[in-house]
Each structure stands twice: as C-alpha cells, then as structure tokens.
Length: 254
Image (cartoon, rainbow, N blue to C red; front, side, top):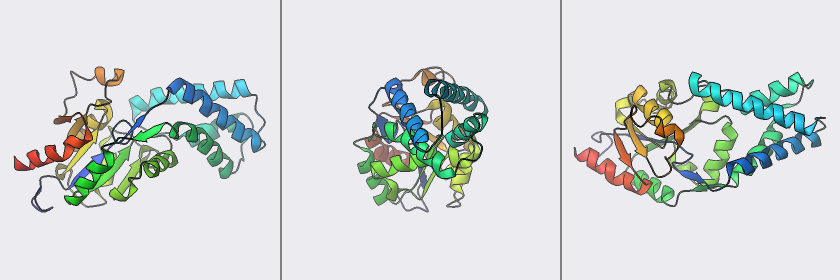
C-alpha cells in the first residue's frame, strides 16, 4: 500500500457505534433498565428520591439535550445533566464518586448489549500491518462509557487517539473535533480518512474538516440517514469493514 511518505492517507479515523460495534438489544427496554440501575445506585448512596418523579425528570432532561445537541453540536455530558438535576432537587454537594458510580451503573446495562463486529479486529489488524495510523472519534455524552466499550471490543491497542465529544465539548460534524485529533500526529486533513455510519455526523463532519469520507452502510438504515441521502454524499462507500483495506489500496493506486 506504499510507505507512509507516499501513501495517499496516513491516518484512518473510525466511529465506534454501528461502525466497529453493534447493539443487539431493545433500546426502550435497555433504557428502562438503565434508569432503574441509576436510581438504585443513587438510593444506595443515600440520595433520597421519589423514583417515578426522578426518572421522569431525568428522561425529560436527556430528551431535551438530545434535541439541542443535534442542532448546536455542543456536548453536555450525562454527568453534567445528572448533577444539575440533583442540584435542583437539593443535592448540591454530592461527591464526584456518587455521580460516577451512578453513571457506571446506568451505562453497564447498555454496555452488555454492544458487540464488536466480526470483521472489526481483522480489519484493524490489516491496517496496522499496512502501517496506517488510526484514531477513534465518537459522539458520546459519557467518555467512560466509550472507553469501556473500546476495552470490551479489545481494540484499544490499534488506536493512537481515542477521543469523544464528551471530552472535547463539541460533536461531529464540527470540524474542530477532527482537527484536534489530527494534531496528535501533525497530519494535514487531506492525508486522513474517516469511516463512519452516520451521514450527518461522520460524513459531513469529515468533509467539513477536509478529511476523506467513507460511509459504512451495514447498519446505516436509520431515519437520520434517510433524511440526508440527497444532500450529503460520501466520497466512498463500503458495506462492511472487511472491504476497507481493498478500498484504500484502490484509492492509493489512483
């Protein structure tokens, strides 16, 4: 595939959810179980809450946040949302550990349903052997959740950079999240490619940043993507990760 000096791309970025990993649960059920685990953790820490009221308020805040983040591309972490709500309910001085444990309980429920794609590790191994540098950029409201999923999938060793919107405070498609990641290597955007399943985040974000965009369609049949089919065009498309090394070789060959 050529040496790093002559190769078209030096860096390959990946999204995580529905790109390297897939979800095998029922979201509504998982969300209910997650809220229950969050509440139980807080109650065990001595936080007195009326269950139905608290869960209703927390869900309302999250839904409001989900609407805002998709228009402003600014990330407010789940920790911030939870702490703000608890402060309004009178708990203004809770230790960080109480918040962290509650969120760990919440996300443990969904983490149990995320699985690595069968071709994820073989593809990453192939790109590593070929000398590509790799990074992961995930839109997520909790960085610890992403880090746990990366370890569950057994893919941490392949990445020089693993960053999230929770850490950066901005979300894809904001180009700055790509540029900040590229600073790790001092690589120009035109020497990088992004592989992701979401047109409005991964593909538009890459193109906003001057990064080559590769849309993976295996799990991309979502309403959000349907809304962008006529307006956001990836520079390349693959159905599975196993197609990626061949695509990069063809792009290198011109």
